[in-house]
Length: 475
Image (cartoon, rainbow, N blue to C red; front, side, top):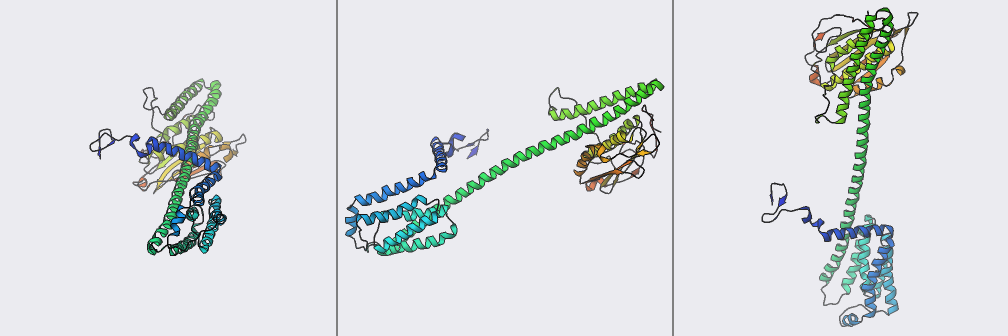
């Protein structure tokens, strides 16, 4: 065999093989396969038809001919044998005892074999030899194929003894060992054929079951993948839309309040609303462009990398413009972390800041700390809560946070992390998140503290509030 340029097997001195050259693709093989499938379907619908057909065939071939043909009987009388002839009613009764149990050979194979071997032993006791004795081998084959294999050794032993008695009664012209070898070969052939068919059917049943289970698993994996993708898209939409809308709403409220007092602050709020809206639109286009899978098309949108720790500085600036005072601390080598970890950290911080803005109000103070210690990344976010008219703090509950907390926990779970949220003693809200990193991600840890510093930068410790167009601007 050689391989040509089209990667099809070819004979050394002949044309290349095709699918039609395979034996199972031959028209005759396909026709036989279709016929076999039809017979199987018919047998499953009416199993008694096949049993009756086998019984009828055995009767016509081995019973009727013995009743109407006496030539073989004359030849047998000329041999030195101990077999005798019975009147036709006795012969007919023995034939019925041998053949009729074949009708239930598949439903009750042990019972059918027991009846047939009993009639066969009775026949030997009477000194009669019949062609219908072929039913013994058929019953043994049916027992191997359909019955309990634990009864097979006993059945084979009984059949061997019975056929041994037949070999003893054969004429002297036939050598005893030759006759015994032939008769035992028939037992072996019946048992081997039954085992081969039974093993083959078992293998096919296992393959069908495996194929069905694989198909179910494939469908389940598809549904799980679709559910996971829907959850991921929902989280991204929640992070993008929820965060930016919270900032826009706060800026709009602050701009409306500042229009009557300081019109220039109202204009500044409108400009900030436009910038925030454009940024949200850009993130939505990036995500939808990935979902459409059109990155290779000429009209595909220009995509930008997923946000990371380096974008937390800009995130804090946007929150400051809405009013809250944000103090950002970072420590450790954060810029060398994996992009997936950085994206998860950014989204957790974004959700925490958004919740602090929505529930803590524009007058709250937010302390944000992101640090790497050994192989653990920690996020700590604390806000002072919302002040009521009397100056007291109204704490918000986890139920008010909505679906953001489960989303943060799912993101942290991807890196064997946890997210704990709850009220603080001062009436505010605290979030603590931990993510487990790869061993190399925690190397070369330094310390740097800053306010609004970009991750990976080297700014000194400082606290710099930003001006705000919202009500009760940042301190």
